[in-house]
Image (cartoon, rainbow, N blue to C red; front, side, top):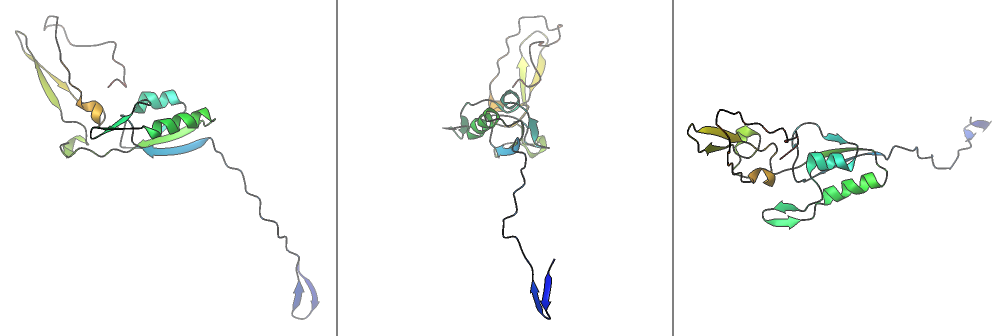
Length: 161
């Protein structure tokens, strides 16, 4: 409260201490960068462990940029974040689609049709789940069953590439 000693003269005591900085949570962060595979659209994924990152975006393996192998710095950063006590991490993958990708397929690798040689030919359509080099793999099917038996694989998991 100012003290009035004379007309036009005011004395007010002011603290020169800096305001204290309030603590904020350091257990939640957000990373953006290239990964081996994973979603490129929509909300960033919330991860609570490095195992979540490996399952959704791939591991520590180097990234292939036009035939040049580069260190996967994002994966190493994610691992360090969780090793240092981080608990919640939002990750958004960035990806530049190849010039040959069709704009109608969301940047995913082109659909590939492969015929199966059998008395009654069947067609199998293979499509990469996410864009990237992992979608360029080659698949050879050697059926050893009757064409009347439907194709299925109980060993494939949701995030298999």
